[in-house]
Image 1 (tube, one colour):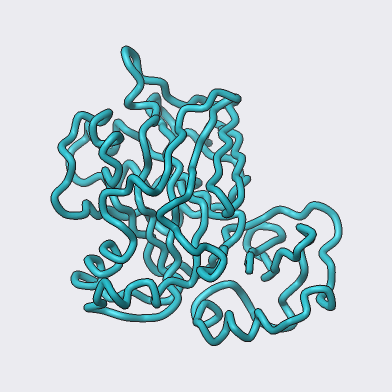
Image 2 (image 1 turned 90 degrees about the vertical axis):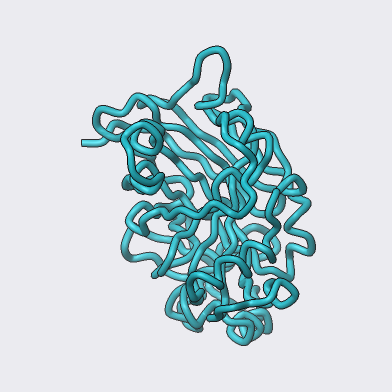
Length: 282
């Protein structure tokens, strides 16, 4: 199933995409795409519905982030060897963990704000993993049972704040609008091999990133197991698994960064596409 949230910001309703690409309203069955609605049982119950009997959503509504009430927005750094090389950093021996603040979360097609004074705002297409049930000390062999589904994430990053101003990476990752998620959450049964997905990103029609999850250094089971050893995981937590080669920071001889008035378009095989317009923060 392709689960989504639609409507004006702050008042989104739960929906599902039918076989014809039409949004159907789920608000008669669940309150939101979050928490307990992400369990195997809840998703199984939704799968039993005849989507053609659900109310059609008219027009072309705004699409919100595909998960609400996210407890933790966890990111894995340098998880593609080619990206580590372009960043002039060694390939990590263990997963690098950082956070995006949940206040950064936005819809997949909402505007991205370039922070005041920023000259180094960058893009990163990433595969997102949505946790469906609580756990800790999870074995790698059981890890995929904790996945509700997958989504597209743009890990927008301000490189000066991330790298040049001391401290952790977190403060360059969590500006408002720096976490577009969606357009939909694709349940894990529809993604038989999340380690064989093409992912790409363009700015103003120029393709900068063109990778595949088959080159992830740390695969999803290892990431989930590792994280669960240093934190508990809860339904609705999101893990952003890293970005491939082609970020603006890595372009030689001169880095290329975002400025107001540009359009980012990005997508992952089977998980949909995003498109954001960049604007100046006020």
